[in-house]
Image (cartoon, rainbow, N blue to C red; front, side, top):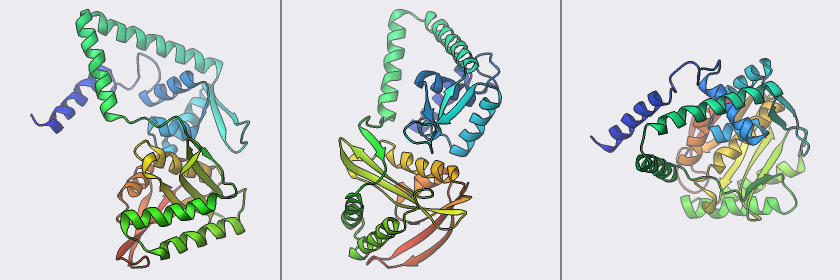
Length: 301
């Protein structure tokens, strides 16, 4: 059996063993996705939908439907965040906390029963093996990475980072840096704080990433200038920034979020596809000194 088949076999075994294929989880009235949302909110106390979606790796549209159903059943509630009234923080209601406690207790009982059939040495082997799997497959986000809005001096970093990294990694010339400078200048000069946003990601106090949402029309917004420094890659920051853009655009009433990227930017394209964007057009060009294929992607909100 090769490695791919071995992992697929284990996936089938484990999903059956933990009851992931059952319509309700732990003899409750909740599906597995609903139970996961209740569990995460029960553990965290409160969080935003974008934070929840990033950690659960769920499409924000699907998560929104899940949360809406839980709200309708009186399990989840939302209110404007104190630090930013534009963001809604989700919490469990009293009924939701009771449901979470019941799910948590049943899960503990079920795992306890499974372990009870094993000897002490077998339990240790099992737990160590699970830790190994988690450690190999999951690179957890650095807790020191935080997001904030833009402030004086940030646009210089945005322009410089784009010029430097795209020249080093893809061989693009200074015309790309000039394009980024124009976008940044337009953002500052025409900034509409009610409909536009820039996120700067910081690690240990230094900028390591950014992304923008800018207004294209009343119903269409553009995602622009997504970039991550090499030292901050591989920890889910790109997806986190894109999720922030999607949540912001939905909150502001845009009906569509669009972007322009290049066919050779594999990491960014993978994030866009996973978030739900669809490529609608492509066009060959050599605007930055080499032959490229520009791609236009859209996300219906």
